[in-house]
Amino acid sequence: MLNDAHCHFFSTAFFSTLSRQRGRGDSVQQLCGELQWDDPGTPEALADRWVRELDANSVGRAALIASVPGDEASVAAAIASHPTRFVGFFMLDPSASDAAERTRRAIGELGLRGLCLFPAMHHVPLSDSRVQEVVEIVAGHPGTAVFVHCGVLSVGVRRKLGLPSKFDLRLGDPLGVARLALAYPNLPFIIPHFGAGMFREALMAADTCANIHLDTSSSNSWIRYTPGLTLEAVFRTALAVAGARRLLFGTDSSFFPRGWQRGIYDAQRQALSAISAPAEDQALVFGGNFDRIFP
Image (cartoon, rainbow, N blue to C red; front, side, top):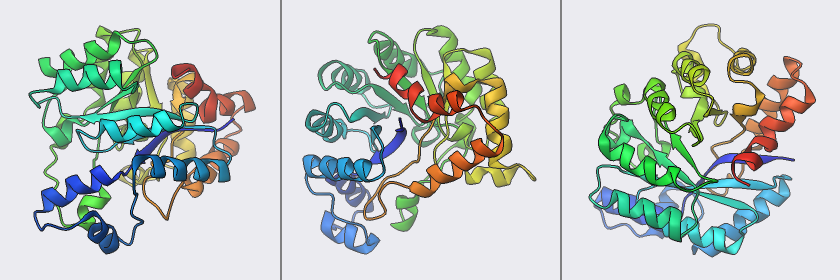
């Protein structure tokens, strides 16, 4: 069993949003041509391509993230096309005037199951009452989770297009997630990339709150901030503190033609084998935990 808890759904609406932010009037086709990425087409067509990609890599299910606020409908269409293969997440800016309404619709009507918060990107502290309002909405729906990006934040596509990224990294502290997790003990919280450079704080948060999970996604290049740290040591420590039941494998895959990042899976599988992680623990990390949280 292999499930991926972290894939981005780079839809036509996603690229349209970036084009508007750039302010040059580029079409989606022009933008994709500049990036040398494939035009995603309709959400259904992109969903079909993701299914073929998952099949080619023996991946059973995947979380698809609507990667700009307001793109919930694209992921909802993908899920409607392949309900047994995808779980839908959506990015939300809690400072938006319709944030609560969007959350209710995404979770209650569109069937999405993961609220994604990026406090450093949207400049809204996790202690803000607007964050608590949307988290409370999600908490009322079993089978859902809250994903909170912490630590260093770098959006490669924005950098490629020359778009400014005025992120306030001070707001991405995993200890703020612990405060929310303690308030909603029955709601799973997911901190991606092992805390993305705030590994110590992510471990502290997970040790304090049994409902905090760590996702293992991306190349985890933040490891270079701690001299001598290795992916093997990260996994060994995370397993010791959080336990195998609270680690979720992910790749951070996003665009085509690159597709699903097999190399990240191979590196993580090798790291767990190198530390002699039991087969049953690896089964939880690579698939079982995802199915338990998102049945």
